[in-house]
Length: 102
Image (tube, rainbow, N blue to C red; front, side, top):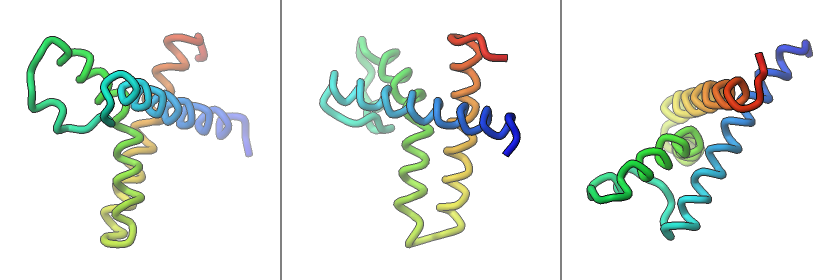
């Protein structure tokens, strides 16, 4: 493997880990896993709910893809690719913004 392959994997794993931390942090604070149903109620915490949902979304999409794999493999593969791509972009954002990778 070339060095840039490791950088791609590092970015994707960074995005997945940050999504897991965001989801676990929100579950620890509120007692529920982030999902779209929590956006049905508007209150003071709506901006934090939106941030938690956007940060957790790559892992949620990946989990949905893994769950659908027995029922509809084509949709599951699409969801897996979408989740890994989103986590890669989230990881690139985190690595360049907070750690100065370029």
